[in-house]
Length: 611
Image 1 (cartoon, one colour):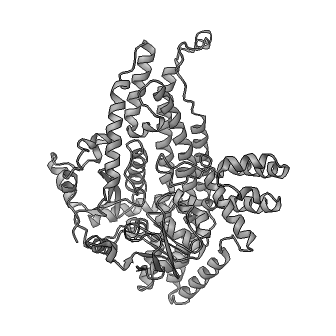
Image 2: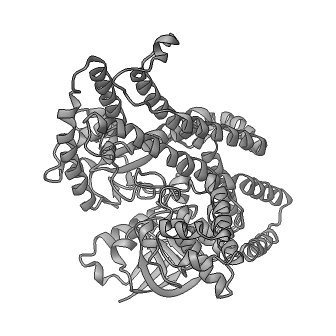
């Protein structure tokens, strides 16, 4: 199975974007002038990380890719010594991220890594609850430290306190230092992100592998159902919306909350009512920290939080109010999901004959249940709470740059790499200190105009799902369960890609993410703004899903995604809501259009399209 050669794709530069490589770190480039690296790149299979990046990366937004490039790889390869795999290598083509897990090929080396992994990972598994409690303290302290970072303005004359207090430091120095602190806190946050994450997925993979050896025909979906029915922090923002909807009806201000989609209008009306003020008090208590949930995945600068875009949670509250008025339940069917989980577990346990196998089955399942909530919980702390604060701190930095003429708009800052921002700030500070205009006021505005054109061209380009030749067998477990990349899925994607007329496609195949069969109209949603258009019973079709889309799961009948495996967010949430999901279809948002009739079989991973 062959996909485009990476160097050929890179060589086919989109007209008008020549020189785009300078927008990204040099180590992300496919190269032709380094024979050893070039040979390695040609022999390696790279797949497009659409799970995290359904759109091209702005130069500054590359920070989180750099952060997990380092963090995941070091924990795999240098800290926990995962036996069969090292880290994950990264490249960028036309703004799109391609990744490749780096395997340990020598069986002897794999064996030599096992004792260290057992000792180190075993320590975490045995002490998981206590260590995770410490992790939460570390993460909250990091977020508070981020919130306290001050971005100083540069005055014409420094405050007298600099002299009378003999401070010996200028605000210009503190601007540079505090920007460095901001970036370093971001990298530190992602160090914590991966302290537990790989082990969380690994516990599931160990259980999956053992279950499939005991029961060769067991679907991966059955294994995931055995650890469903979990109560995780990522559901809390949505639970707060449900509480506020119930309170609105109790205080009889529900009509006010539903008469306009604009938060400012609703807020002003509530302030005029005694019970409206009571409701607003409860809202404000919920906002910190729960409304630090991003409206997207949190990976991009434009993923603003609910606190920044209050129309989004207002829409969710209005949805729940409408359901409550109709006498419908707005609770997740947790009891039903857990009952099915226990039934499936008991059914398979009864088939295990050897006591030693039963003992290991119970131990591995127990470990997976203990550690798995972290896989979802960390999202709230890192991608949502931390990132939401971080993006807004960066906007304060951008305001300084705009004030000194280096950029024309605060949002232009994202078109610079993080090291370019640092260089521009040094230019600003030295020019301010000296009393001359910064050089960047001449160079950056015109460069930013060009980069905006490049980004527009990148967005119009369709990245191939993979580059290079796929290996005979894809075995790396995270690639399979998180990204949904297997030999079969690649073959399915390639088959769709080879079809000249997408309108002729009547079936898509993906992973059976959550069981059940549903028929309904499609609603293609690429952003949280489009999620608001969903109607009751429609089938959500998206590149991927975000936790902030949770209210949508109260309306939809099923979910289909382009990317993701059985442990992707969409699959996990659909199992908790007891609705069908087919994930990792590769091309759903390109083939399916809003209004099409679909049949979603979440038990087999098939989507039928009636045109």
